[in-house]
Length: 267
Image (cartoon, rainbow, N blue to C red; front, side, top):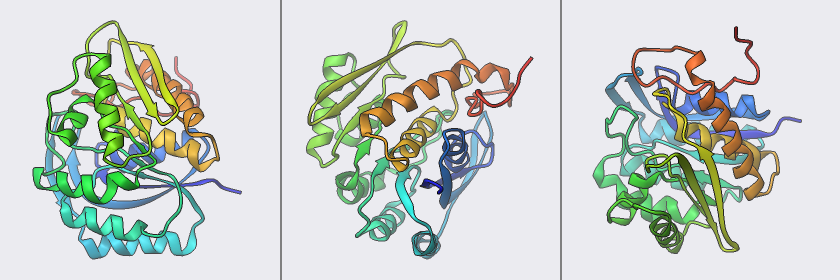
């Protein structure tokens, strides 16, 4: 039996983030990946040069087609685009009682904005309360709350709790944008706080880290893992993918992480 995970996100023509990264992470961790494409992006490791949203009707049709036939066990939400797309996704997921991991993709690694400012309120109101797990990086958390970016762990905890107050069942505050020799992520749930610590890896090839982490968590949830176990496994998987990223040498900008670092032979 296949454990099916669904990604609802934008396409990355460079293959390092978005739907492409999600499907790679699902596969690497033993889950079958299905997809709903919310937008086409023309991008590579250097820049996003064009974004073309899918129509709400097309998004709705994809969601309906997947759920009509496939036994989906968990859903990951990534780049969704504007308010209409967010409303369409929320409606398409109505009545589905399964884990939802919301990665509030707002800005690409290149710095290009992927979520219009007018979509923030729709995201807060229509999808954040449905999230089993919200996975913001520090700038995304600040955007969602309308405050300054957290500068220390105490502020990360406060912001994570504030995001739970907006409706998310659990929040994984990702510390990749912080400074220091170690990267600290904080999983905040109703049962407490879990610190996930890893040495900060010196590489520019970190394109798709957020997509990959949230997809890896979704794969674990689809396989029936407890949320904390799914997060812990995904965290370890991502660290391995970042450590091996320089082996790929893809592009001349911010290259992708190595999703199949345990499968491909190098050297």
